[in-house]
Image (tube, rainbow, N blue to C red; front, side, top):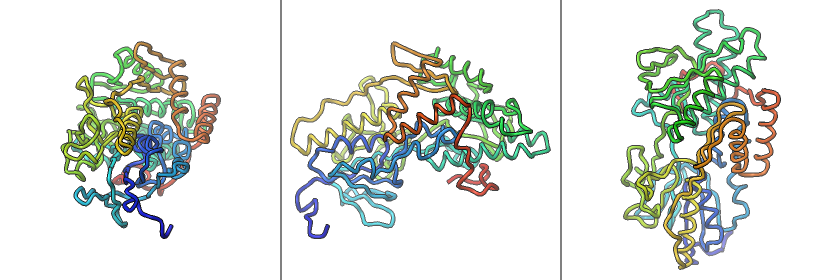
Length: 435
């Protein structure tokens, strides 16, 4: 409002948070009682629950089920405001954040929580043929590719072309790859083929390929073996210790084997955002910014980097994992640290990540839960996985909607969001470079 004093005039610290993912929002919430002006900048107007993106890509959930407007989330936090914009750089000397097409945003403290993007290990041209899923646009593109493959196979008279249309290759045996392969298998075996006349449940071939010796390397060997068994029971062809050597428009080369496939999905690697180059800071091999024990950037104690953008070394020498609970805890810690610094009170004790376990789902009613000393598989694991994911969704409407969608799918085997949207049908298949 005109005439109101600015933050500088009232000596109120200006805290800018770039990124409204798990880390950024957790930092913002932790600053709710701080005497500061908090500005959250994101290129999207919504917070995305990334762990369930694969369910949007396989037509189990709607994009609206896993996204919530940022302004709605922060509407009751009076010291916070939201800016929609694409950050293009940081002026450390002038202490401003540059935004495309807009005036720079000044800061006294800066928190970068800009997440990660796909990494093709130096083979960036593979992105045109093997999209990953890191955003809603990615997920809806993959959903269109999968659904169009079935539509085209229904009317394809040539056997080899039809076989290629119904071959789905998922690259990467981590949680994303395992969950994606299982979901596609269930879609092909139990849901979508009921509505076609020329396609049977056994027409589709789903291949999951992992360069390492086993699936889910973050989990114990026994759970990795169980994941492989459960996937194979669903009809997924699991290939481990076989790196992908080439990807082209309609083929994947695994070692010396060439597989013809019209739908290829990438889930093998990630790299951090461009934050490291904005700061001209030391980064690791994954472009993550190397940070101090309090997540500040060496030589810049007013700048903090958290979430997938940070390379944070823990007390045991390992790096903080790139998972949602770790990002939320890091964001909460930095928010509390800044609150204490502004108030002139004692800083929180050193950050220590509380690992509550790892989970991955394999299909409709089978999941793996590693909770440390206790491990669960099968239906019990799936129930734990479901409760945890519904609980961490932001917003009651989302929780209710997802719970109803899962219950419907469980009872009927049906997928309720089988919509081909966003692109012309002639270019929905991954034959053009993904944005």
